[in-house]
Image (cartoon, rainbow, N blue to C red):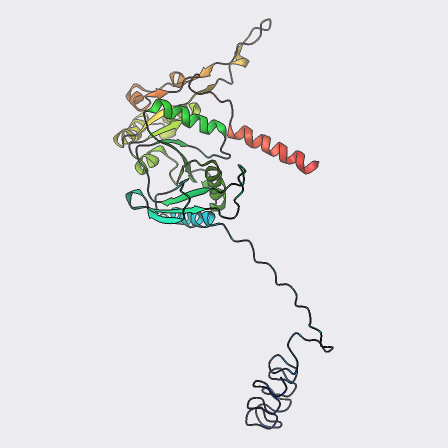
Length: 342
């Protein structure tokens, strides 16, 4: 304003002949640094003390204000809480993080064995469709639950074979509850990036299934976190578990490692798979090849000292799904490639 409170031509501050901002004075001359008539601060038409409004043009019409850039979309509450929990897990401050279905109300509770359970929900979409419906989940820190049946895996991606295998194993295990286990640390590949762990955990939230996230790649490490539990392993994993070459070529070391597993009260259930080498072993060309055998626990050469750790094997009748994450990833890449070229 021309004669207003701030930046006035003859007012208290920035005056033309006043104490501070004088016309020809030492500080704030007419063309000087402070209180100048047409200078940077307190000018007649400047930023503060202007004759006209700040956004008015010379002809009196408002000057359009450019739109401010929209902020990046904030992470949803589930992702935020899970990310913070995973950061603590990677730093070694906690043993595990569990994502499991939760009730509708948002609240914070103490998890079992002193862990903290944070329940969250996606409130941005209330559609009733399968992909967009409101989904509730808990992020539970450092509250491992023993006495469960766990299916370890990388789950990249999670598919129906995993779900069916866990259900079939649970039916024969005698356990009351099952869950998945995702180990994000690997001796060969290192630690998975947190954003990738969040992506894989999101699969379980959408499916309404519990998953325990750990940094325990070895079964003895898992057993320390959840003693008195059972683990479901595939046929190929069971084969490797009883090979001394994975224990420094020492049969005694293998038995010692499994002695700790036994001491912690853990056991294994072995799933089967079809024998992919059976069709190539036939020498007959006149008759059609025999259907591939289904390999089970009986085909695993388990040392007598360890048989008590493998009490149950799933038969073909119990479980058979000829599907793998590797095959699914291959199909997904093919579909993405076709979509990109179409």
